[in-house]
Image 1 (cartoon, rainbow, N blue to C red):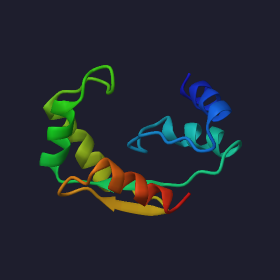
Image 2 (cartoon, rainbow, N blue to C red; image 1 turned 180 degrees about the vertical axis):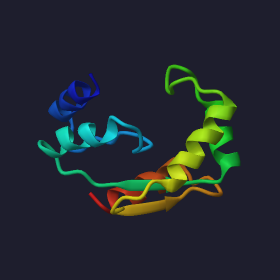
Image 3 (cartoon, rainbow, N blue to C red; image 1 turned 90 degrees about the horizontal axis):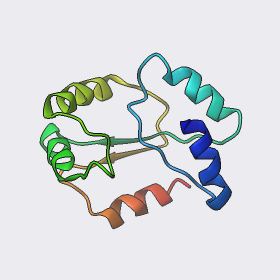
Length: 109
């Protein structure tokens, strides 16, 4: 379902960005499927736990999968262990503005 949504997004856009921990049993297969059709660039966004917690508290359920604060702690720990050939690492502590994040991402497109 996500792969189909990405394909639809590429019909209207030259670049598509998704957010993932990059971990879990299904990620490798998901990545391989995408890699058959698209150029993939890994972007790591690092932030202190407090920044992540504040972000989740501010997000509406329409924009983000609902998670508890304990789940945020767990996901943050998992994400800290993931290693890929990063094309870009963004340090988001203190939180950057949306414009700063977009400019950083555009620098690797």
